[in-house]
Every structure is written in C-alpha cells, then in structure tokens.
Image 1: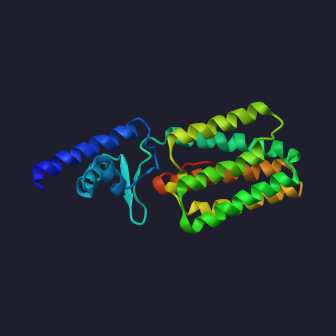
Image 2: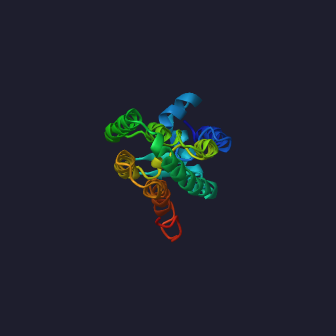
Amino acid sequence: MNPGGAQSKSQVAYHWIKERIARQEYTPGYRLVLSAIAKDLDMSVVPVREAIRQLEAEGLVTFERNVGAQVSMVDDSQYRHSMQTLSVLEGAATALAAGRLTEDDLRRARAVNDRMIESLDDFDPSAFTALNHEFHSILFTKCVNPRIVTLVEAEWARLGHLRSSTFSFVPGRAHESVREHENIVRLIEIGAPLGEIEKVARRHRAATLDAYLVHEHPDETFGLPAV
C-alpha cells in the first residue's frame, strides 16, 4: 500500500468515526474496536489505527492500556449535572419506595446484583450499566410520588444519551458499587429510617460521579460533598 493510498483510507476512517461520534451513535465511553471498524469500511486495521490516533490528538478519543480506544467525555458538564440531579432524586425515590417493597422485590434486586457480581470477571461496562439500571429500578419505581419516578427515569434516559457507561472510564468502581447495592437492600430489609436509606442511596450515586472526576480530572478538587 503506498503512502498516498494509506493516507486516503485513514481520512475515510477518520471522518466515518468522527461523524458517528458527532451524532452520538458512538457515545462517551463507547469502545472503538479497530478490527470491527476496519471490517465495516472494508480496509485493513492500519488506516483505522491512524484515524484513531488523529482523533486522540483532537481529544475525541482516549486510549488506555488494557482498555483500548474509547470515545472520550469531551464536555462532561452535562454528565456531572445529570449525575448530581440523579443522586438527589433517586435517593429520595428509593427512600419513599422502601415501605412498599416486598420480600419478592428485594429478592429480585439481590438476584440482579448477583448477576452484576458474576459479570465482574468478564467485565462489559454497557451490560453492567444495563443491570445497574434494572437493580435501581426495582428499588425506586414503587416510590409514593409518581412525579419523582418520572424525573428519575428521565435522568437515566438523559445519561444514556450522554455516555455509553461511566464504568468504561472507572471499571474499578463496579466492585464497590455491588457492595453498596447490598447495603442499600439490607437497610430497606431491616426497616432503617427513611433518612438513612436516602442518605446511603444518594451517596452511592455520588460516589460514582466522584470516581469519574478523580479519574478524568485529578487536578480538580470539586465534586459532590459527602452526605
């Protein structure tokens, strides 16, 4: 392959990937599998790798050892705001739903969390996030205030458009998250005060945002305060 041809193909790959990032088909955290992209474009991996390097230089893509290439969180202010909002709303919704949750609900929540634990050995951030949503939905959908439930679900949907999975950026957070899940279920099970349930559920969500901020913005000192 001559240099001119290689450059031409790398530019084709560059624009193809960049277009999908721009229209959010590839959301932040989305893993860019070079061999799959090369197959879609009917070219070798070499020009795709060059395109990835160009996108990395522009800040649109990050590359980490043992993780690979993924779409970066270019402007994460919206993500921060949604996570902060969800922390408050979901904490309240979980507490207000606690009295309505049955033994069967808590068994289902634990079963989902068990599946999350099992998935840690062969970790897929997007699949883990889907299970995470399922777990929390069991705990908040019986909230006595349906308006709060609507707002929580809207923020979950908004996060889905903003990024593929926070756990793509901070996979180590997943191990802490499943332990915190069990603690939330236990508090509901023993009939802990609603204020305590809300505090723990809220802090659980805030801890994920804090882990992301530490990873992506180590020089910044802000984040959600401990509650």
